[in-house]
Image (tube, rainbow, N blue to C red; front, top):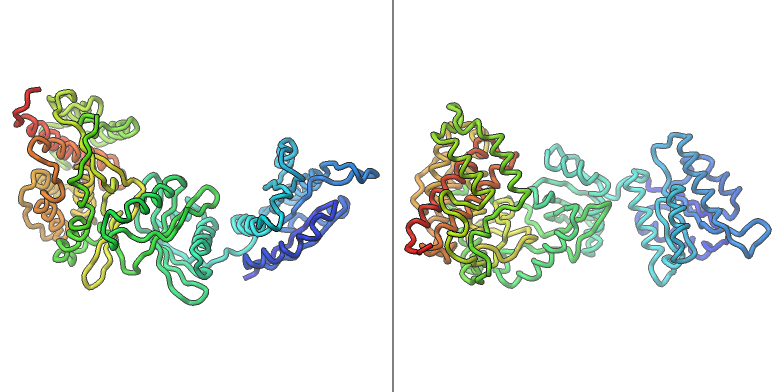
Length: 552
């Protein structure tokens, strides 16, 4: 692997004499062999950079002594930067050099702007390179990372090729060099041995555009490591996830929350990453429930996930908020717009004889529109919906992609992605969880794209929401076992659902089903199920409020 880095130091005052060796050593620690050439004269520097590709890195001291006036300094380094960029343009260079300009002191904002305008990639202060600040090591890392991104040196690890669409999407989004740099920096942050090789597998999309990958790593000492790697272009989301993991660590069983390895996110070019411990044979709960062989083990896995010291542990400890209960189900503006777009797109399929074939498409569209716009539940206005909001501590993004199953002799669940963990309406976690099973695990393959199973899905969703017995389904034994378990464990999963609160459970399902209708990655029949299922739940919510002996 040729990671040779020719560096030109253009410095009219020989300030680099004491820093040349430390820079070379710092680059060697980045697995680069450095050739450092010094130049003190403008004319000599111009000759050295005459060949546009002669140096991968040029470090320019902006201030040079004036000709004939050694006590006076002028920003002649700007000429060097302009010369380098001009010759690169003439040569039509595909790999421009990394140019770093050095200022004498802080506060010269005008000179910094002029240096960047001339073509400098970075502008640093001499004080940042003092030995006591470890500045040379940071400079060497900047050089290494920028050269890697520009493909001027080979990447520090071997990233195996993959034809997985999810992995290819991540590489397109993040960039292969940035992805490698994030993995290398995570290993360094964790005081691990250097990573030699990485094989990636796609696990699931995360919230707000994040990606979740499995990374099988080979370290320099031959050891194997498996990480769950989460990437996001929003650093604050990853920071919040790490903070939540520390905060909730003692609230649940020690085996339930997957161990976070990162102390803080590492960052490169607008992308950020954290790492978690990962078992080599772990799969998402979604995948596990799509496997018929899992059916007999479903009760044990879901009991470990929710009961005892599981996720349902705080579900009975509520806080009474000032807001009305109905306020928890109002959709934000961007989601209201997405629902409207989904309704416009899917409406023709509601009455189509080859599709859903419902009898009342106009009524369904009108009811959903009124709920989305006004919060109206059929004939019940929001201010007539009884009850105040009760919140409990919940995962708040509980779907089958955020639960992993460790496939041991006795499969064990663990939870990832705590970025959203917070207090929210008491029914939301279970509504999100069950909606995900219906949408993703009932007929998950080709059958999900056809309409012959659509009436059965609607029936199953209705039985689940009323906590009634769900019949056998030989095509989906594991998913049905999971839904049956939820029905059987309703008192433990929804301890706050007394009869007067039942309408809120149905309203929570409305909100989740409308979200599902907007997910374009789902098969069209499942998205239509989201709309019709939401209407069914509005009917049940109105009926539940009609049974109350409450004077509105």
